[in-house]
Image (cartoon, rainbow, N blue to C red; front, side, top):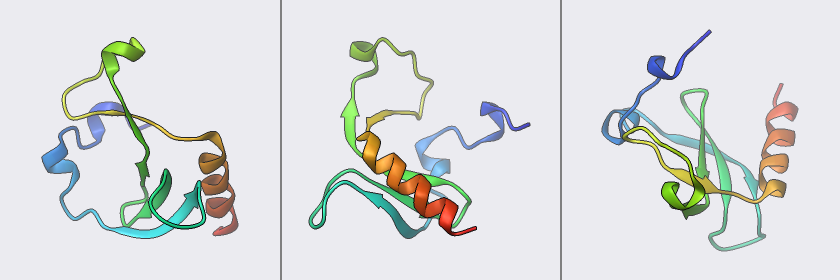
Length: 85
């Protein structure tokens, strides 16, 4: 099983060779809004509202951020990803 340490842990290394391949879930019909994208690395990129870790009461390691995204966007993304297989 992969652990947190097995994954890229800084913003600089996380961006290496990362490409968004497809939109898999979005909250609105047009314009920019919270969304989920599939990448070329079997991962997802989430667009949402920045959340301050201290305000949320969450301790984060360097290179990570909290993002709030509407539940319906995640559900739409999950349905799209399941339909791909």
